[in-house]
Image 1: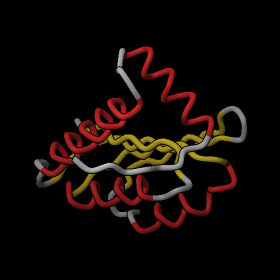
Image 2: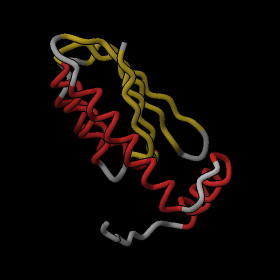
Image 3: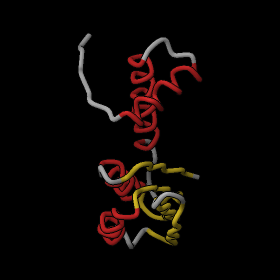
Image 4: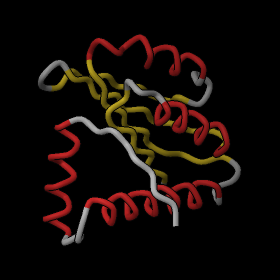
Length: 127
């Protein structure tokens, strides 16, 4: 078993502690392991998808990070059927993408948003 150390801001630590209590995890490490297992399971599920698919991609970010969204969005215009942008509370934005195209391209777009430090939440929901 390996040991790693990570730095997290106070907001994430508070949210982690709340999740730990809510779901009954015995410690932060157990919560982190569960999160990693969920990511791995999600990755495997997406890798099984082939051919043309339809899905919804939801992204939230700070208003100041709009340029990053635009750069990614322009690379995938051929699979974006509809894009909605909404301003929500506290200078945050919600992006809703209706996607239709090759599973490989859709997963690539989703991973690009997930890898961006400017995105707060990224969720790909397939049909």
